[in-house]
Amino acid sequence: MSETEPTGNGWRRPRVGHFIGGDWTESASGRSYLNRSPWSGETLSEVAAGDVEDADRAVTAAHSAFDGWAGTLPHRRQRVFLRAADILERRHDEVLAALAAETGCGRVFGGVQLDFATRLLRQAAQLAYRPAGELLPSDVEGTRAMAVRRPVGVVAAIAPWNASLTLAGRAIIGPLALGNTVVLKPSEDAPHTGGALWAEILHEAGLPAGALNVVTHAPGEAGGIGDALLSSPLVKRINFTGSTATGRRLAEKAGRHLKRMVLQLSGQNPLIVAGDADLDYAVNAATYGAFVHQGQVCMCARRVYVERPLAEEFAERFAARAAALPTGDPSDPATVVGPVINEWALALLDRRVREAVELGARVLAGGVPRPPCYPATVLADVPDEAEIAQGETFGPVVVLETVDSAERAVARANTSDLGLVASVITGDRSRGLRLASSLDVGIVHVNDQPVNDEPHMPFGGVKDTGWGRFGLEFAAEEFCELQWITVRDQDRDFPL
Image 1 (cartoon, rainbow, N blue to C red):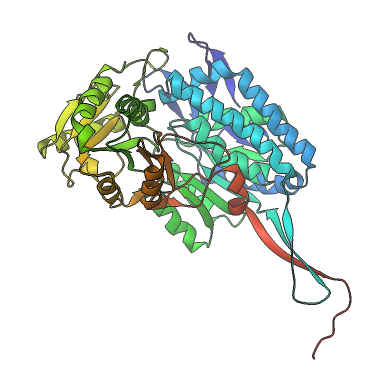
Image 2 (spheres, rainbow, N blue to C red):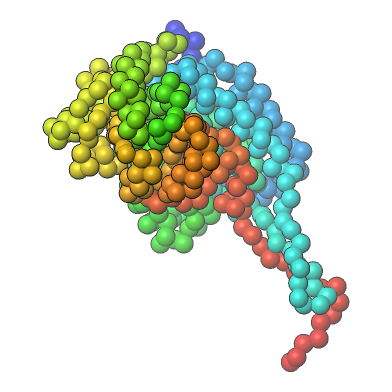
C-alpha cells in the first residue's frame, strides 16, 4: 500500500509498495529499503524491495488486463488521461516538493517536468481517436487490403531517476494511450516520483486495475527484475532510458528473445557558438543548457565549442556566470545547482575533474566538491585522453573548447560514439541549418541550447545513444504491431 504522512515542507511522506493489479502490495519476500534525500540524508520512505516473483506477478496482471483495456471505447480511454492531467495540476505544489526531496530537483526544472507531464497526458488523450490503419491499393482484382495497427500487449518500461516524473511518464503514457498495458520499473532513487506517483494519479483518474503496474527494487537489485521482464514471453516490448552501458547489456539479452526495444541512452552533447553569435544570448543559453538540474539531464551540454573571435570573451563571461550560480538546498527557490543524486555520483565527478586537471586541463570555475553538491564547473584545455572528454559525465561539469570554425566543431563533435542532441548558436540561420544537417545526432536545435523536449516530438538519438523514438506522434511505430489484412469482394480463380 502507499500510505502518506505530513512533513515539514508540505510534501506527504509515502510508504511505497508495489502497485500490481490495482492494489498496493508489499514485496513477496517482505523485504524493503529506505529511500533517502540526496540533500539532507533524511529518510523519505520505506520502499518495497521487489524481485523476480514480484515482476512475474506484475506481468501476469498486465496480461490479464490487456484485452479489457485495449477494447475500451475511445471516449472512456480519453477521459482517463484528461482526468489525470487535472489531478497532476491539482497536486502541483506537492509534486514540486517531492521532486526536490527525492531527486534534488530545483523549482525551475521541477516546473519543466510538471509542464511536460501535464501536456503529455492531454496530448495522449487524442491518441484514442487517431486512425488505426490505412487502406492499401492491391494489384489483385477484387481484393481490398488494409494495414492495421493494433496494440502489442504488455510493455515493460524501465525509467531513470534524473527526470523521474517526465521520463517515467514518457515511458508509460504513449503505450497506455495506444491500448497496451504496462509494467513500470522505476529507479531505486526515485520510487515515488518515478513510479508510485504515476500509479496514484492514473488509478484515481480511472485507469482499470492491471493496466499499469509498478514494481520497485532495492539499490543494486535491478538486474533480476530486468531479466524477468526481458525473458517473459508475455512482455512484447521494452523501453529503457539510462546509460549506454546498461542499455547495451539489456539489448544483448533482448536479442536472445527477439524482443524489440526502444533505447534512449547517454549523450555527450555539443553546443556550438559561431563567431557571429550574440554573445550575451550565447552565454545565457550555455549556462542553462549545461547546468539546469545540476547537469543531470541527458540533453545537457557537455562540450561547448566557440569560434575563435568570440572565444576569450565567451570563456570569461561563461565562467563568471557558472561561478555565481547559487548552490544548495533544492527546496529553496533561489537554488540553481542542487545536490547530485548520491555519494557515488559526487565521487565520480570529483575523480574525473581531478584526472583532467592532472592531464593539463584548466579550471575556469568550480572544480571543488561541496558535499552533497558539486558546483557548476567549467574546464578548458581538456586533453582528449581524459575520461571526462570521452563519455557522458552526469553532473554540472562542461568542457570548453576554442575552434577555428564551426565546421571544425562539427567534425570534433562527430568523433563521439554518442549522438543524442546538439545545438548551434549563430547569427546566420541558414548556416545554422547547414551545420545542423552535418551533425551526427538525433536532435539539433539552432539558436537554442540542447535541453528541449515536447511530448509529440521524435525524441531519440543515433550511434551509441540507442535506437527508436519516444514521442506520442511516433509511439504507434514502437508500441503497435502492423497487420496486413485483405478481404475479397468476390470469389477468386485459382490456378490449381
